[in-house]
Amino acid sequence: MASKLFVGSLPYSVDDDELKELFSEFGEVTYAKVILDRDNNNRSKGFGFVEYGTDEEAKAAVAALDGKEINGRKIIVNEARPQEKREFRPRDNNRSGGFDNRY
Image (cartoon, rainbow, N blue to C red; front, side):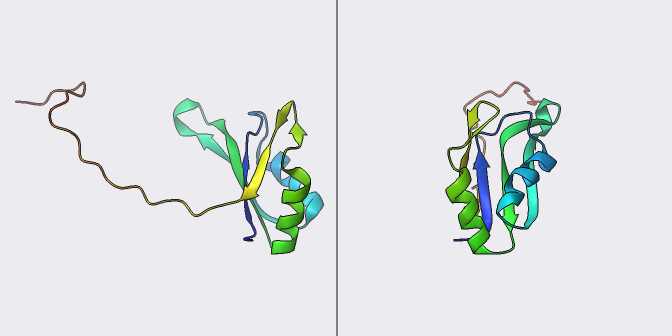
């Protein structure tokens, strides 16, 4: 198991410091970040990532916190997977898209 964890279904009120505090009970948290939505006034997207120094600390946090209720929401805690590479998809020329630049 990797020491980086995905934390989903977070209440929108949780910030980085609260996330770190919640997970620090199980070991030294080296990184805690709630992901923010830039397009929505930097509001939480409801998920984040936590990283520990050792795999044992991460395993203990998953065992204890996965499914735990935080501010009325059951959070999801599991091993973080690497971000998948997104393929560039060229625009379909047969569809209009709002701005027409046929000058």
